[in-house]
Image (cartoon, rainbow, N blue to C red):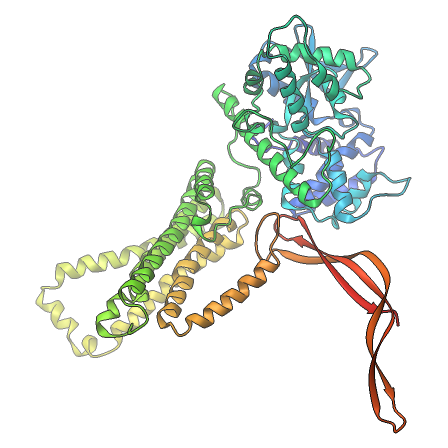
Length: 639
């Protein structure tokens, strides 16, 4: 197994199916497996992969049929290696009621107790509810199943990025935990309570109820958790014995690496607001998005912690991620203005530096470009307002305070920083790629470096030979001093420099592994070298300030009107549909034209039968996928 925090165990099953190539029992699955391997959209791939995993139970091959992620061989072995309290346990096959070994399913034995893997937060119940809400389809044919329905409709089901990520992280190390026999089935309540925050809160209550050493245990919290378990009493006793080995709640959290699932006070987090056993499932897209976002963060952080533990114990781990481009897009790291969320920016830079050092450095330089551009432009403009203002800005004594003139030197530094980020990404590309692409990139990178060094060499050479008579004579000759030769060569040099920076920039933008980083650097350059100077020029004139203010206010008002109430992003909502809420019969006043005795047109007003309709305009956020409704009313005549 690849010890990687976001490695999806379902990939092991997919590989097994492809190797065996036996689709007896579900021949249609072969078509969808081929379709899955060709699909490029990561969200659709995750949805199809999960459905194939669920439907693999219909295949006749016993090894595939019995495959279950949370009790697979590699996961059970990882429990022995990760959890100190299971280090001396015995690894063995599961057996059925007749004592026969079940292939592909494993367990651990310790002190006469059986421990098996449990998927902490189940995907299936949540996914089914989410799909019903997204598609508006709550019932399917009696001869159909939801697994097949979702697989067939996978191209038409629009998952949000958070939902797609949950389908992947749901079967990674961070969402598996060893539990005593009966715990998994007992706590799920037919899937409704199969969410780890609900389970963890009942365990938290159990430790609170048993904080004092008493002769008897208070198991009310566990009895509530296992309400609908057929073997409730034995499951409660097994769980009691398991929990009592950790002595305290804090020990339980620490020994099972559950720190990401509790807040600063040690209380279990809720995956969405008001999530309880009485309100177990999200009911709106907004609640689903909150659920996905929270559970993804918890699982990912726990997975990273487990990987760190395995590494400390000497096991080989992979710190990278399965799909760097997808990882880049699935975490919201778009920082248009760096100071809108400084902590987020710092955390992102740290994360990038830990995962991919060279890309992280380029990201850091791009972020620094934005900071420098905003700080200096703001400082120059504020000083301009204080020292000069708009009374006589273009008088000779005030020219030195013009913000654009002062910012020009900063812009050249920022342009040099952009070239530096491009070179850094080129070096990373050379390190990670092979073949002809690598050699071509080496050539381009060397040429850029040479072009950057030439001005330095030129300056040094001028300083050395400027006092030599022959150089001065040559410089002032008719050929050089009185022609446009020098200007021509300078322009040519500038064009060559720009071209040889644009070429690798476009190259990196095309490459899926580097697109995110190059886009970030290009946006930083456009913001600091193009947008800010343009804004400073407009602000200098003053007369355009009012027009810019009106246009900016109008754009802001429009963006605010289509702002997502959940993720708070402007220009985020797109109109999806209209849902009629109610209709009632009313009288509507309308203007009616009639002809008089002399043929003239007469206009009168009168009441006619009409309808008052209340309806919701439903908007979907293009960023987080949440749903926003705006209630409206209209009245119209029946005729």
